[in-house]
Length: 155
Image (cartoon, rainbow, N blue to C red; front, side):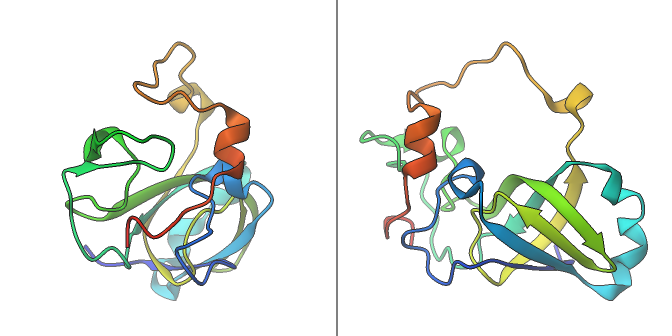
C-alpha cells in the first residue's frame, strides 16, 4: 500500500491529542493529496463529511489485547480503536470544509501531524448511518469522549 498524500494537523506529539474526531471537533487540519491523484478529487466538494484512512506511522508494535483510553480492562484490539493493530490503519470521519486544488481543509481532526494518507471516501448518510446499533463494552458518553486525551500507552 502506498500513501496518496499527507495529513497536517496541530498535533505534534501523540500525548494530549483527542482520542476520537469528536474530541477534536473544533480542530482544523489540512490534507495534501499528491498531484498525481488530483483528478480523483473531482466532485468531492459536494460532501459534508469524508472518511480518511491513514497509516498510524508512529505505531511501532502490535498487540492483540490492549487497554483502551476509555476503559480499564484489556480488550481485543479489533474491539478497540487502538493504533497497535496488525496493519496500523486508522480511520476518521471528518467534516470537509473546503477543496482547493489538491488541498482539503477538514475539521474534527484527531490525527497526528505528518500522518500518511492512504485513501479518502465520502460519508454518505443513506449508506453509512446506522440507527439501531450496539457499542459493545463502550459506556462513555459524548462529553467524556470529547474531553478525553491520549497518553503514552500506544507509543
